[in-house]
Length: 359
Image 1 (cartoon, one colour):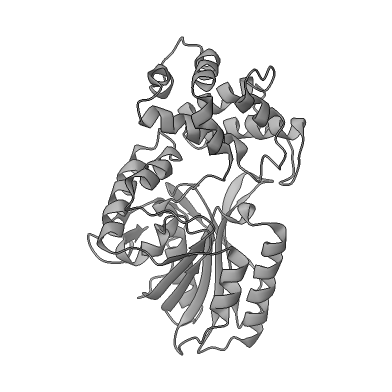
Image 2: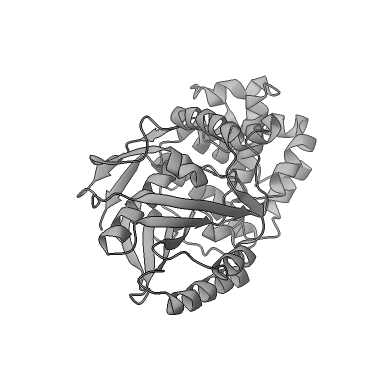
């Protein structure tokens, strides 16, 4: 396999786009310390050349945009779920990263035997809720406070999935020595920090509220298992975080509604905002899943609300999203009043392992 990413656009369709999406996903997994997931995706890619099952034919003839739909991770999630449930023991050597085994043959056999279980995993996008990304949100809020915005934040999140990042006020953060949140907290994060530390401020979370088109209830073991299936198996700390998130949600569920991003943002921005609070829209690794018409509505609603923002009732937009051109995740912030021009505060690991601070 070539070690270069194949150029492609988010909306590309067709067989070549499917193959490029799998190829690029393998390289992306390797670059993000996920060699086992890379092996699984590469084995799935091998099915594309001679699709002998309905599952493989659906992959090869994917009707949507495979990159935007995260097609490789949909398929990989299904296999991981079988492994976690112990339903496909032949996958164990692959997930153990064993040498001298034929990954493609093993995966092809599993797909043949478990096709009925695997096919529904292609029906919806991955739920990639990751608590480590909340470090980026907190760092951005520290930066906003340093810019003079009220350090009390009313947080709105789109694509909340299970609402793990909506519980960010319950976590503790050590951001290059800058301490935020309760100790010890339901979870604690100390990402590797590259560059200067973020500004030091006392900030508070006034409220959190989120939406998802298919919200996950962490207190339901079946739904929690599905979420675990999307965690890359190499990242053991993420499984520990998931258990901590389940415990926190059991104590008090995050506030999530079933709603699409555009409807949610428009409805929330129409509500009164308390003086002395900063209303902030935040999201991480979700924008690619939001349809283009909804992206346009969210942007228009935010810019219209930004035009009405005042120093006592400002508005901010924090996004941690993939730049598919350079294959980095970028932390970008806009705020009003102040013009709303995008400012890139940093780059970050997709699952919170490190932050390169540019702010």
